[in-house]
Image (cartoon, rainbow, N blue to C red; front, side, top):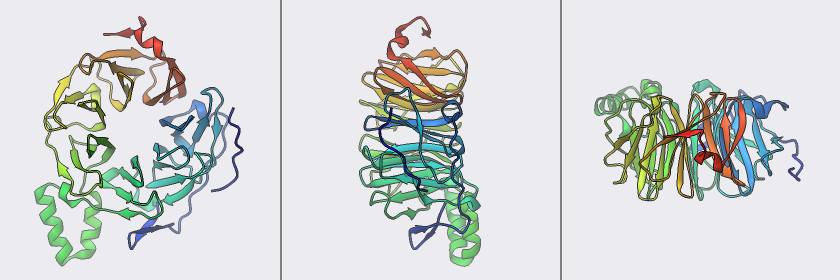
Length: 342
């Protein structure tokens, strides 16, 4: 059981590169006994505490993987991702361009950004020391260099296709009001941001892939041969994996310059990836968990209920999963049983 008592606490508009809360205030998440059984989208560890996020602003914590406690959260929107700097400071993203921060290990959260008027979700957040980047639909890109004290909203125009970039440059010079409206929907959805080697990578819709240095500046598009959406990129030793729609999975051994398709055998969309010791897991729809221990041969473990697996993390010898039916756990030994198939 968690020992600490949660105290009652509770998409902002960028002005001069610093956020302020909009006039439309969020509604706090309601405490629910069924929160651990409903849709959860991401799960991680903050020190020795499991933390999962999901629908209706639910954030759940557990110190043993059995008893789950609901955090105090100031929004009731679908939360999409969570990441921590250390065992105390963490960030979560969600719909309505929601960005949340905690400084007490996930017990209480406050709003850093909330902009329902944008009608865009933030989809992923990555913490690299004091550098925090949240990305989302239509190129949403929020960044802090001071662990969430102040934030900047950046428009990565170098990631536009050339015709769109020239079009926007003309608007910016001659019709600035129209430019502000048009640029909101010109970039693709940024679905995932992660560290690969010494660089940051963003994976997104319509075959979008880009890389930058770790400060997140001077982004460069990487051409790939697949034009469906990517939802996850992960670095494993000297290899990189890129995953997306309908079980499409690719491997690179040259920091993303070229990609080789791997056969998952199942056309189930891969939502995220996770590496633990010598095994890489890919969490997918229809109850599928693809995994590999040699970075080449892909095996598949299937959940009996067939529910989408959104994310996972290893804790105390189990793989804990965030699924569309809540928290589930699988003993790591199960991945050598006859339920796992080649």
